[in-house]
Image 1 (cartoon, rainbow, N blue to C red):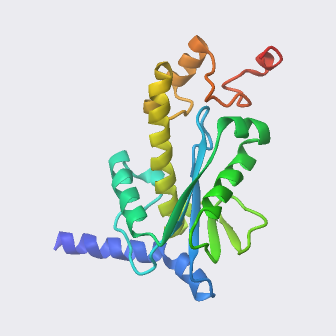
Image 2 (image 1 turned 90 degrees about the horizontal axis):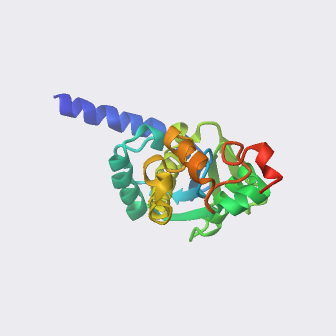
Image 3 (image 1 turned 60 degrees about the vertical axis):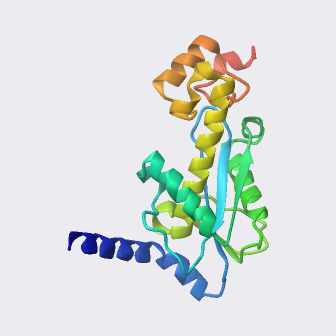
Length: 219
């Protein structure tokens, strides 16, 4: 009976999570893309965005804001999302691009790249907390989109899993920073490595914790 109750509760939770996406579809758009990013607050590595057009007839149990999930669960769910999605794509903005245009504009750039690579193209985009201008279809910016939209939650999982993979790759190139463990965030281990070794080519030099303002003139 407990298993049946859990299944019922999960089905109800997913139905609520899909409510906004279904409401948007009811208004006309048939292909709704959820968009989210990973790595915006990091000191190193790219910002990675994912755009996902989910199968509206199929809900994946366990879908949630990626930050609420264990790494192993994110990996499994990301695989299921990519296998079942109508379309999905990854967009990346590099640390050099982040330094050149600022992190918000680089996030928009990564999201735009993710959307532009979708085939077929969506009729509408639901985006977590960021507005993307000059699209050929409506874009709805959602506060905490990854907890109110199923498709945005799916995008948050795909983006996080892809970025973690990229950071593990960078860890093999720059092993003394510990990228595989902290994924570029401002962990104590990461700050200590920066103090000992200075920034790598994958660090965001415009971030205060990476390159103190007094050091910029000498860089």
